[in-house]
Length: 192
Image (cartoon, rainbow, N blue to C red; front, side):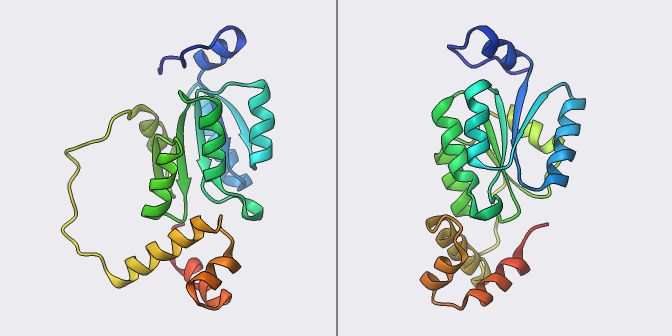
């Protein structure tokens, strides 16, 4: 079990010791699955589907862990949630999940305070392992595969999505493509 964040007293300390987890996910089915799975592992779980809900929960609770979906309903950004959570508690262990994995969003998530970034599908084992990993792994194998044109295009699309806070119309305009073309590319590349 992880040590509680420093500087916490009273009920907030009790919550940290109980392994309080915040799940920020707008997909009800996936969120319910995560909640049940983490509860079976001894976590107390809170759930939010937007930044507003996260901020309301953080007024009453001090979770030691958070799992944040990168893209939330209504154009909401999980990156904004990561930033808000990290600003409130720098010791919180935050893992970002996404079906739209890219290097650009991974870098931003880590800069904003996430400990790890996982592409969906990720299960409870993957997430819990990410909670435990505090250090990078210098022994990870480097890929010998050169970057393809498709991968470069994908990275550019995601970089622009992050810059526009996931606004599809504005991203398409900045990339000089039709909105429907961009939507098709995103749906085709989505990691399910």
